[in-house]
Image (cartoon, rainbow, N blue to C red):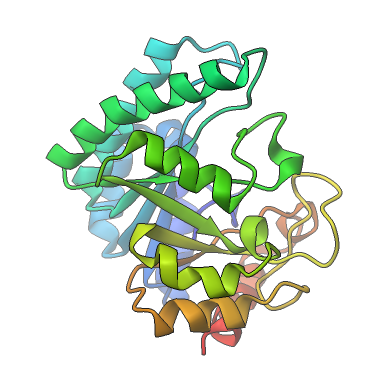
Amino acid sequence: MNQLVTVRWTLDEDLEAYREKSIPAIGVSWRKLCESGVQQGIRKIQRSGLAVSNLSWVGGFTGQHGYGLRETILEARRAIRVAAQLRAESVTVITGAQNRHIDSHACRLVTQSMRELAELAAIYNVKLALQPMHAIYAQNWTFLQSLDDALEMLDRIDHPSVGLALGTYHLGEEDKVIERVRDIIDRIVIVQLADRRCSPKNENDQCLPGEGVLPIRALVASLEAHGYDGWYQTEVWSQDLWKLDHHDLIDRCRTAHLRCMP
C-alpha cells in the first residue's frame, strides 16, 4: 500500500497501522519521508519489518513548479540512494508537464535526465519506473498521457534500469491494453491499482480497485499469465476516501486488493 492512500497520517502512524493490519509492504512517499526527516525515517522503516515496494515520486524535469533542472536531478539522485538503503525495488518518476517547452525540447530534457539517473540507479540496483498518466494530469504532472507515449520515451532513454509504472487508473481503459501486456511485460516495474467510476473530473476522484468500471481483474490476470512477478501497489487518490477513518480505509483497500487478484 502506498502512503498516499493514508494521506492524513504521518510516517509513524502509517507504519504502526500497516503492521497491525498485516500489510506486507509499504510504498514510501518521498514527501512524507522528507517531512519526517529522511535518515530518521529510514531507520523507522527498517525497524518496522515492512518490505518497501516502491519510493514515489521524483522528477519534474520540465520546471513547471519553479525548480531548476539540476536541483531536480540532485533530489532524484538522493531519492535513488535512499531507495537502495530501504531495499526498495523501484523509484517512480514523473516527467513534469510540458510547460512552455516545444515537444522535442521537453522530450530531450527528460531523456537526458533519465539517462543520467539510470546510471546511478544501476549502481544501486534500483529500477526507475516511468509513470504515464491520464490526460487530466497533464497540466501538473506529466506530458506522457498514454502507454504509447511512455513506450516511446523508454525507447529514447534505452537503459535497462528504466521501465514502466503501470497505473490501472491511467492505462486501464486503453484499447487492447490487456492484450498488449504480453509485449510489454518485461518493461513493467510496478503495477499501481486504482479504479474509476466515470471519466475523471479532477486529479483526486479515483476509487478503490474493483469498485469502478475498469477491467482491473482481467488486466491482473493477464499480467499473472505472462509472468509478472513484481508488486501490486494500491495507490488511490480520492478526496472522498481521504475523509474516511484511515483504519477503515485500509480494511477496504485490503478487500479491494484481494477482489482484483485472479
